[in-house]
Amino acid sequence: MATISIPYSRKFITAEIPDENLEGILESEAHDFKTNKDQESIVREALKNPMDCPPLTELVKGKKNIVLITSDHTRPVPSKITIPILLEEIRKGNPEAQITILIATGFHRPTTKEEMIDKFGEEIVKKEKIINHDCRQKEQIVKVGILPSGGELWLNKLAVEADLLIGEGFIEPHFFAGFSGGRKSILPGIAGENTVLANHCSKFIASEHSRTGVLKDNPIHKDMLFAAQAAKLSFILNVVIDSQKKIIYAVAGDSRTAHEEGCKFVENLASVKAKPADIVITSNGGYPLDQNIYQSVKSMTAAEASSKEDSIIIVVSACNDGHGGEGFYQTFKNAFSAQQVMDQIMKTPMEETIPDQWESQILARILIHHEVIFVTDQCDPQIIKDMHMNHANTLQEALSMAKKKKGENATITVIPDGVSVIVQK
Image 1 (cartoon, rainbow, N blue to C red):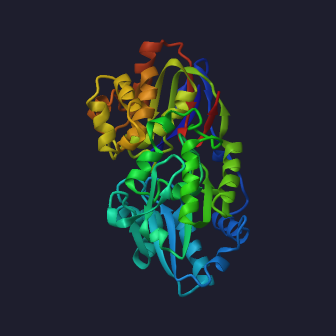
Image 2: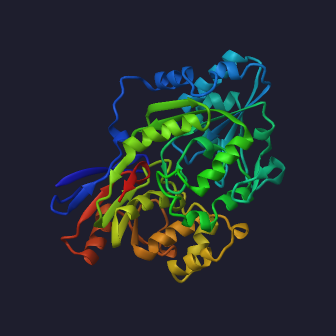
Image 3: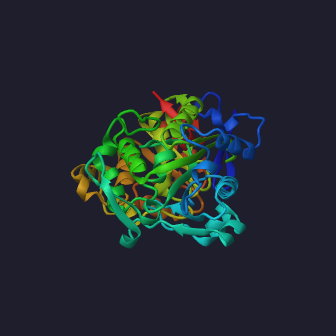
């Protein structure tokens, strides 16, 4: 009997799978990566050795208005460690600089004060100027140019008008941008609503290159690179974390060079060989990524990549914040089937892309081929059912449901953290 720990909210639940049923366990080597350096040392070493640009203490000299972009409440970036060090480096080189911390909410809701305290620490929230980006507030954004895709590039005015723009974040596999981090702090991080919609259009999401771990020929990534250059993102600090959300690696410097180096590191650790099975269990890595159904679609794509044509996918995800997007929810609630959702989306041109369409498109793609069971005791089951999925309060209940359809001898693959792996067929 295999006993496997699966992240759920701020804890772990246990999956017990008989050896004769277990097809495989797919995990990133990042989870067990060992380093003899503490987290602060890793960050400071990266800042001392920036790639393709001067150290931050040199870059900030003479700059009056500095904007530091950081991730929002949906990302497990260990900002309690990274932000104080970045602020220290900036003020070491320029004590008089005016610093604004800009939260890259992308298309998400604003980060609350309580979430800021949880993410940054009470002292940072109390002493620093922190602003939530709002992609829908026209007075916040300014047009910068035209993306390679043809969409208009609108970015946060504070960032565009900054004397120096810095980004911090983390790098992990991303289900359509290839990898998170780097240029994503600009697009979608601090982009306007119409810019995000154009970049996430149905044509791009449907591209075979818009997949986990793929940057080459990825049309979404291409737009993002252009946006970062147009915004003059001068310096980044990106980290890689393990299953405990601890920093195991960091890169700093030029937004493109440093990010690509970080992506190589993640790719080497996160690439796993698919183990197609009748039942595939996955999770969204626990808090903060499993707060809603919207974010949980990411882990489903890992399960999708290791599934047979009609496999049942079990997603362990708290979803205490519900569906995570009203448009996303209504798209499925008002549809007869996932195929109807997909057909409508594929008829939608770039300029008519609607909010959350990309998440709907990917979920529809999965549901057309797979039954999905959500395991949660923190989300209204009706929401899950309205979105054409099944609900179970416990993992054992979900497995019983799946085995009734697939048989007691069904093969099972477990992906404990679906957002941390690059599943290769």
